[in-house]
Length: 248
Image 1 (cartoon, rainbow, N blue to C red):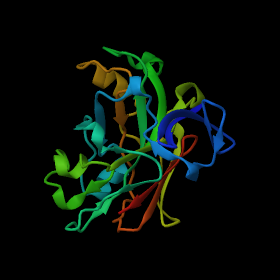
Image 2 (image 1 turned 90 degrees about the vertical axis):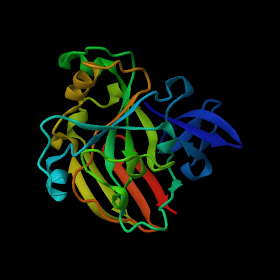
Image 3 (image 1 turned 30 degrees about the horizontal axis):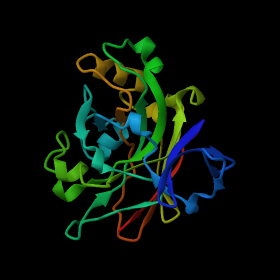
Image 4 (image 1 turned 120 degrees about the vertical axis):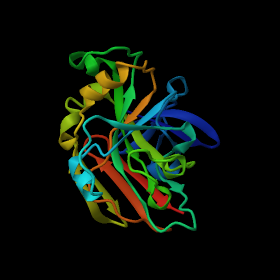
Protein backbone atom coordinates (compact mmCIF):
# COMPACT_ATOMS: atom_id res chain seq x y z
CA UNK A 1 0.00 0.00 0.00
CA UNK A 2 1.08 3.59 -0.66
CA UNK A 3 0.69 6.06 2.23
CA UNK A 4 0.85 9.86 2.26
CA UNK A 5 0.33 12.87 4.51
CA UNK A 6 -1.45 15.84 3.01
CA UNK A 7 -3.13 19.09 3.99
CA UNK A 8 -6.70 19.71 2.83
CA UNK A 9 -8.69 22.78 3.92
CA UNK A 10 -6.05 23.61 6.52
CA UNK A 11 -6.14 20.19 8.19
CA UNK A 12 -3.53 17.42 8.02
CA UNK A 13 -4.73 14.01 6.85
CA UNK A 14 -3.25 10.56 6.45
CA UNK A 15 -4.04 9.25 2.99
CA UNK A 16 -3.53 6.34 0.62
CA UNK A 17 -3.35 5.98 -3.14
CA UNK A 18 -6.00 4.52 -5.42
CA UNK A 19 -5.98 4.76 -9.20
CA UNK A 20 -3.58 7.69 -9.04
CA UNK A 21 -5.79 9.65 -6.66
CA UNK A 22 -5.29 10.63 -3.03
CA UNK A 23 -7.82 8.89 -0.76
CA UNK A 24 -8.39 10.51 2.64
CA UNK A 25 -9.38 8.53 5.73
CA UNK A 26 -12.91 9.94 5.48
CA UNK A 27 -13.26 8.45 1.99
CA UNK A 28 -12.82 11.60 -0.07
CA UNK A 29 -10.87 11.11 -3.27
CA UNK A 30 -8.82 14.01 -4.61
CA UNK A 31 -6.38 14.62 -7.43
CA UNK A 32 -2.74 15.26 -6.58
CA UNK A 33 -2.99 18.96 -7.35
CA UNK A 34 -5.92 19.37 -4.95
CA UNK A 35 -3.86 18.73 -1.81
CA UNK A 36 -0.74 20.14 -0.17
CA UNK A 37 1.82 17.39 0.27
CA UNK A 38 3.92 16.74 3.37
CA UNK A 39 6.73 14.19 3.76
CA UNK A 40 4.93 10.83 3.98
CA UNK A 41 5.73 10.08 7.61
CA UNK A 42 2.98 9.88 10.24
CA UNK A 43 3.68 11.91 13.41
CA UNK A 44 4.57 8.90 15.56
CA UNK A 45 7.20 7.96 12.97
CA UNK A 46 8.79 11.36 12.50
CA UNK A 47 12.50 10.83 11.90
CA UNK A 48 14.75 11.07 14.91
CA UNK A 49 17.82 10.50 12.76
CA UNK A 50 18.36 11.05 9.04
CA UNK A 51 21.42 9.26 7.69
CA UNK A 52 22.56 10.06 4.16
CA UNK A 53 25.09 8.26 2.00
CA UNK A 54 27.63 9.97 -0.18
CA UNK A 55 29.26 8.37 -3.24
CA UNK A 56 27.26 5.14 -2.93
CA UNK A 57 27.22 4.54 -6.70
CA UNK A 58 30.57 3.92 -8.41
CA UNK A 59 29.54 5.85 -11.52
CA UNK A 60 28.71 8.93 -9.44
CA UNK A 61 32.07 8.66 -7.66
CA UNK A 62 33.78 8.58 -11.07
CA UNK A 63 31.66 11.53 -12.22
CA UNK A 64 33.11 13.52 -9.34
CA UNK A 65 36.62 12.12 -9.94
CA UNK A 66 36.71 10.14 -6.68
CA UNK A 67 37.52 6.51 -6.02
CA UNK A 68 34.64 4.38 -4.79
CA UNK A 69 34.71 4.39 -0.96
CA UNK A 70 35.84 1.31 0.96
CA UNK A 71 33.21 1.90 3.65
CA UNK A 72 30.06 4.03 3.76
CA UNK A 73 30.53 7.79 3.66
CA UNK A 74 27.75 9.11 5.86
CA UNK A 75 26.48 12.48 7.01
CA UNK A 76 23.53 13.55 9.14
CA UNK A 77 20.61 15.73 8.14
CA UNK A 78 18.15 17.74 10.21
CA UNK A 79 14.39 17.19 9.95
CA UNK A 80 13.75 20.73 8.68
CA UNK A 81 15.66 19.82 5.52
CA UNK A 82 12.68 17.64 4.51
CA UNK A 83 10.09 18.94 2.09
CA UNK A 84 6.98 17.51 0.39
CA UNK A 85 5.90 16.53 -3.11
CA UNK A 86 4.99 19.44 -5.43
CA UNK A 87 6.67 21.94 -3.09
CA UNK A 88 9.38 24.53 -3.74
CA UNK A 89 13.07 24.45 -2.90
CA UNK A 90 15.01 27.70 -2.81
CA UNK A 91 18.22 28.17 -4.72
CA UNK A 92 20.37 30.80 -2.96
CA UNK A 93 20.97 33.80 -5.19
CA UNK A 94 24.76 33.61 -4.92
CA UNK A 95 25.33 29.99 -5.99
CA UNK A 96 26.60 28.75 -9.36
CA UNK A 97 25.85 25.02 -9.09
CA UNK A 98 22.93 23.37 -7.29
CA UNK A 99 21.95 19.86 -8.35
CA UNK A 100 19.36 17.20 -7.54
CA UNK A 101 20.13 13.69 -6.25
CA UNK A 102 17.47 11.03 -6.86
CA UNK A 103 17.74 8.53 -3.99
CA UNK A 104 15.97 5.50 -2.57
CA UNK A 105 15.03 6.33 1.02
CA UNK A 106 14.63 3.58 3.63
CA UNK A 107 12.17 4.13 6.47
CA UNK A 108 13.02 2.11 9.58
CA UNK A 109 10.02 0.24 10.98
CA UNK A 110 11.15 -0.96 14.41
CA UNK A 111 14.01 -0.54 16.83
CA UNK A 112 17.16 -2.00 15.30
CA UNK A 113 20.33 -2.85 17.19
CA UNK A 114 23.03 -5.22 15.95
CA UNK A 115 20.86 -6.45 13.10
CA UNK A 116 22.26 -9.26 10.98
CA UNK A 117 22.26 -8.87 7.20
CA UNK A 118 19.89 -11.81 6.70
CA UNK A 119 17.33 -10.19 9.02
CA UNK A 120 17.67 -6.62 7.74
CA UNK A 121 14.44 -6.46 5.73
CA UNK A 122 12.42 -7.35 8.85
CA UNK A 123 13.31 -3.92 10.26
CA UNK A 124 12.15 -1.82 7.30
CA UNK A 125 8.68 -0.22 7.27
CA UNK A 126 8.86 0.95 3.70
CA UNK A 127 10.54 3.02 1.03
CA UNK A 128 10.07 6.42 -0.55
CA UNK A 129 11.79 8.73 -3.02
CA UNK A 130 14.18 11.42 -1.83
CA UNK A 131 15.68 14.30 -3.79
CA UNK A 132 18.73 15.33 -1.78
CA UNK A 133 19.77 18.64 -3.35
CA UNK A 134 23.40 19.66 -3.01
CA UNK A 135 24.96 23.09 -3.42
CA UNK A 136 28.40 22.62 -4.91
CA UNK A 137 29.52 26.18 -4.17
CA UNK A 138 29.50 25.48 -0.43
CA UNK A 139 31.24 22.12 -0.68
CA UNK A 140 34.59 21.93 1.08
CA UNK A 141 35.16 18.18 0.86
CA UNK A 142 33.02 15.47 -0.76
CA UNK A 143 33.85 13.18 2.15
CA UNK A 144 32.49 15.63 4.70
CA UNK A 145 29.69 17.76 3.22
CA UNK A 146 29.27 20.77 5.45
CA UNK A 147 25.92 21.92 6.80
CA UNK A 148 25.24 24.53 4.14
CA UNK A 149 25.55 21.91 1.38
CA UNK A 150 22.99 19.39 2.65
CA UNK A 151 21.04 20.81 5.57
CA UNK A 152 19.30 23.91 4.28
CA UNK A 153 15.59 24.10 5.09
CA UNK A 154 13.44 22.39 2.47
CA UNK A 155 16.29 21.05 0.35
CA UNK A 156 15.33 17.37 0.66
CA UNK A 157 11.92 16.67 -0.88
CA UNK A 158 10.51 13.29 0.16
CA UNK A 159 7.58 11.33 -1.25
CA UNK A 160 5.05 11.43 -2.63
CA UNK A 161 4.27 8.02 -1.12
CA UNK A 162 5.61 5.80 1.61
CA UNK A 163 5.31 2.33 0.06
CA UNK A 164 5.04 -0.66 2.39
CA UNK A 165 8.16 -2.82 2.36
CA UNK A 166 6.12 -5.94 1.58
CA UNK A 167 5.08 -4.34 -1.72
CA UNK A 168 8.71 -3.91 -2.81
CA UNK A 169 10.06 -7.47 -2.85
CA UNK A 170 13.50 -6.46 -4.14
CA UNK A 171 14.56 -2.87 -3.44
CA UNK A 172 17.93 -3.68 -4.99
CA UNK A 173 16.52 -3.87 -8.53
CA UNK A 174 14.61 -0.60 -8.97
CA UNK A 175 15.08 1.68 -11.97
CA UNK A 176 15.39 5.37 -11.15
CA UNK A 177 15.49 8.48 -13.25
CA UNK A 178 15.39 12.25 -13.02
CA UNK A 179 13.74 14.66 -15.42
CA UNK A 180 14.36 18.40 -15.62
CA UNK A 181 11.55 20.26 -17.37
CA UNK A 182 10.43 17.00 -18.96
CA UNK A 183 13.87 15.96 -20.24
CA UNK A 184 15.53 12.85 -18.80
CA UNK A 185 18.91 13.83 -17.35
CA UNK A 186 19.68 10.93 -15.00
CA UNK A 187 19.06 7.19 -15.18
CA UNK A 188 20.26 4.38 -12.96
CA UNK A 189 19.31 1.32 -10.95
CA UNK A 190 19.57 0.54 -7.26
CA UNK A 191 21.39 -2.70 -8.15
CA UNK A 192 24.44 -0.52 -8.78
CA UNK A 193 24.76 0.65 -5.16
CA UNK A 194 28.16 -0.02 -3.63
CA UNK A 195 26.59 -0.69 -0.23
CA UNK A 196 23.18 -2.31 -0.53
CA UNK A 197 20.15 -2.05 1.73
CA UNK A 198 20.86 -5.08 3.96
CA UNK A 199 24.48 -4.01 4.39
CA UNK A 200 23.44 -0.53 5.49
CA UNK A 201 21.00 -1.83 8.13
CA UNK A 202 23.65 -4.16 9.50
CA UNK A 203 26.37 -1.51 9.36
CA UNK A 204 24.51 1.32 11.08
CA UNK A 205 22.89 -0.88 13.72
CA UNK A 206 26.28 -2.35 14.64
CA UNK A 207 27.25 0.86 16.45
CA UNK A 208 24.02 2.83 16.91
CA UNK A 209 20.37 2.11 17.62
CA UNK A 210 17.95 2.85 14.80
CA UNK A 211 14.41 3.86 15.78
CA UNK A 212 11.06 3.67 13.98
CA UNK A 213 10.85 6.51 11.49
CA UNK A 214 14.60 6.94 11.08
CA UNK A 215 15.57 7.55 7.45
CA UNK A 216 18.48 6.24 5.42
CA UNK A 217 19.10 8.02 2.11
CA UNK A 218 21.11 5.65 -0.06
CA UNK A 219 22.92 7.89 -2.55
CA UNK A 220 22.52 8.77 -6.22
CA UNK A 221 24.00 7.57 -9.53
CA UNK A 222 25.72 9.81 -12.04
CA UNK A 223 23.94 12.33 -14.23
CA UNK A 224 23.47 15.33 -11.94
CA UNK A 225 23.06 18.73 -13.60
CA UNK A 226 22.72 22.32 -12.41
CA UNK A 227 19.15 23.44 -11.61
CA UNK A 228 17.95 26.98 -12.18
CA UNK A 229 15.00 28.91 -10.67
CA UNK A 230 11.79 27.84 -12.37
CA UNK A 231 13.06 24.36 -13.24
CA UNK A 232 10.66 21.52 -12.46
CA UNK A 233 12.52 18.47 -11.20
CA UNK A 234 10.92 15.01 -11.15
CA UNK A 235 12.81 12.23 -9.39
CA UNK A 236 11.20 8.85 -10.00
CA UNK A 237 11.86 5.34 -8.69
CA UNK A 238 10.19 2.22 -10.04
CA UNK A 239 7.29 1.12 -7.83
CA UNK A 240 7.56 4.15 -5.53
CA UNK A 241 6.29 7.00 -7.64
CA UNK A 242 7.43 10.31 -9.09
CA UNK A 243 8.45 13.13 -6.74
CA UNK A 244 7.98 16.61 -8.22
CA UNK A 245 9.77 19.71 -6.99
CA UNK A 246 10.23 23.23 -8.35
CA UNK A 247 13.29 25.45 -7.89
CA UNK A 248 12.42 28.89 -6.51
